[in-house]
Structures are given as C-alpha cells and as structure tokens.
Image (cartoon, rainbow, N blue to C red; front, top):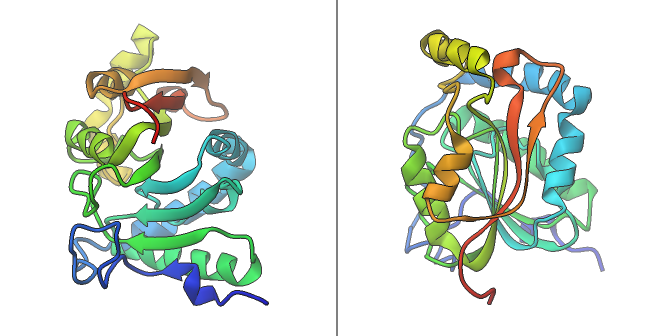
Length: 245
C-alpha cells in the first residue's frame, strides 16, 4: 500500500513534536529576500552541474538516522540523502528560501516513495528549537559562512547532537595561501553585501575544533571552477565526543 505523502513531509515541527522544545507553532518569518532567493537558485543550478552535486552526494553518504540540516536554503541536498536516513529536519531562516524548499520537498515526496520524512522549520542556526541530544547527524553545506554568530551555531549543533553523533561539513574557508587570504580580508565587506551575508575567509576548521568536535575523516578540497577566494573548502565528518547511543 502506498504511503500518504503527508506522513513524510511537514512544514514545521509543531503539535508537541518530540524534536522541539515545546514550540506550539512555527515561528514568524524573520526575513524574506525573494530577489536573493531567485538569484541563488539560478547561480546554484549552474554550480551543481559543474560538480557541487557530486560533492554533496559524497558528503551525505555519511548521514544516518535522524538528521538536522542547517540553512537548507532551496533544498539542494535533498536528492542526495541515502537510505540510512529516516528523517531530515531542515532549518532555514529566510521565508523566501523556505517557499522554494517547501515546493521542492513536496515534489520529491510525491515522486519518490523511498524519500525520508522531511520536516521544514524556520529557525536560525544560533537558536535551534530542538531538544538536546535529539539528532544522530547535523549537516552543514555552504552555510557557516553566513551565520551571524559562528561560535553560537556550532555550540547549538553540539548541543542537539547525540554523543558520538556526526557533524557533516562542506564549507569554504580562509585560504592557506597568504595572498588569497589577504584578498579574502580585503573583499569581505563588499562580498558580504552582494552575496547574502557570506563572510569570506572564516577559519571554519579551527572554529569546529574549538567548539569541541573531534576530527573524523576530513579533507581540504580545492573546488573549481570558481573564484580563488572561494576555492578552499573543508569537507568531511567531525564527531561529538562520547559513546554513540
């Protein structure tokens, strides 16, 4: 018997969902940038065809169980989750992005009976409305550059992960090349203004380790074709210390 799509897709975690901390309803939109969302969709579609889709698929092979995705945007990861994933709770602070994400999830749910259950929640990475130790895996792809408070976002990720849980990361970061790093610092302001709050040159690897995560299988990728200021990416898995429950 075919499963009803409503059993696998919800717009917000509510009505006493065990993942939340008693949130009665989805939060009111904090921001909505429809022009940026449209431009992001266009640019990202080109980047996915140029190779980013393969990188996402490779990263998400490590996902399992109950997954929290931070800054899910328009849902570029959703096609790449493996059968080891039961539920994906996708957070996104931007209402315009959420509309596109909701449409993509609904379409995938209707067309793929094996698609994991998805819950879409409007929330910021620095203030997650979920119980502690409630996820097996946290996924962050090209989002830590734009969170307002990187330290708080990583602290929240640590809090909601179960002991032994995985943080799967694909993020551009401060270049090891000194000349490129200088340009990243020089262009930080203008780039942030035109790229939706993206901060060039954040030391992502160091921030993750400083937050208490233990490196697992981690690589530094030189992603091309793209601008030199965006080529260096950290890719792989980090672990929350403790036994996997």
